Length: 302
Image (cartoon, rainbow, N blue to C red):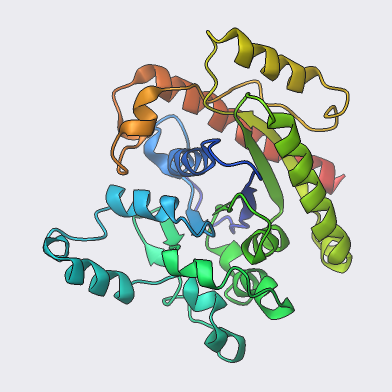
């Protein structure tokens, strides 16, 4: 039985790649939900998802999983629109009003289940993503700090956009760690290099922040990997053995390519499925992911 007297101190992790189409959102969602306790082999943890990708795919998927938009609301476009406007949203953190009047927890955080909350994304957030200023860039970090969210969760997972923007900076400033989902295909290494340049630029611009709160790369997690493809296997091996990338940890476990993951409904969850093979893959990544964070924590505390 979990000891509820142990104070939580959330690990904040960004899932990020400057290249799209790498199953970043799927990995973020599946890992988070699995860690939250749908996998009976794991000890349940409290998870907060933050959707900073203006495409809002994480939000749409989890809304489907947890039936946030009820059938009555879905009967008309007006009903859906009205319901969405009533819900918490990341927009309440980045709009002009938030600079002078900090948003409440209820205006940002939506409870989905006993162990899962989300700060939902919004398609409207694309309008705020170009409004770079110091207040907005620090907004997420400040919200987590002032609302003492680390004490409420075990993990905070941030789904980032595949672009350099206000949201990217905001996510990295708030994070303790970041992980890089990578599909082994042409230009994969270029995407990794570009991301590392972005991270280095943010670290340099906010050096005082990262002196107090270090940022660590958890590693590369290979996604949508088709083991039977000699081309993908070759690229995966090149990335794994590259001297250029030798300082970046590469996960032994990977996320396999599955046609159905691209075609199933938004509400599909591997943890809820009957696909024992996919569940085994997800369990392996989850175990290695937690072990990797524990390892980095030990290094920090030495």
